[in-house]
Image (cartoon, rainbow, N blue to C red; front, side, top):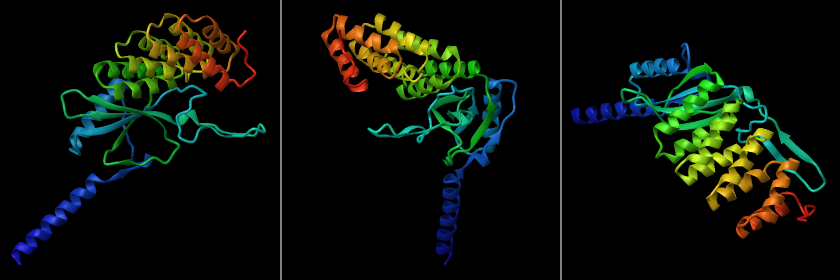
Length: 274
């Protein structure tokens, strides 16, 4: 009987521990953190989390000024279009877009291991880890923190892609210049391509100008192909002109073919290469 009782007690203890590990957190469970700036809030949040002894990793989250045309939600953007010109497009409440930093708090300094951009108007559930809420953060502070996180772990493509996607959503000229810098100078062509892909999401004149300048200075065929795809996502006359110029004049026949394909596929049969 004593052995049975011991087994039951251990089983109950395991069940309690497992239930704690499997706790689910919603927006209502976010823990608010005050502070003078983003770095201060991060430090305070990590100290609070460590004091709870709930584990080694935690989510830190905050709002930032997002572009009006930003699309991060799974159900935002065009969801229906037919040949008769009927279209349904879902907008997005950009005031609810947030950066979430999965943070390893086990060391002397916090380390970001994953970066996500979500719209918290959706009923997300966060399993196993609490979320510490840092409030509204200035765009430049946010971009600087994301840039630092990306450079602190230069070997992590996943971290870099998450940072670049978040940076592209910010309503700040710094987002375009930083994406352009990474696309032009990073030593990893896959990270360069990710920067180009996210730059293409910024469908402004400044974003298009950056893509065109990148194409004119790019040496890698893989990067040039990504840039052509990014330019094709812009519907302006200047974008069409650039694609036509590539199709007619580029020294690389592969790039000419790529531009022609984009013109015919994305713009329809009404585009002519004179």
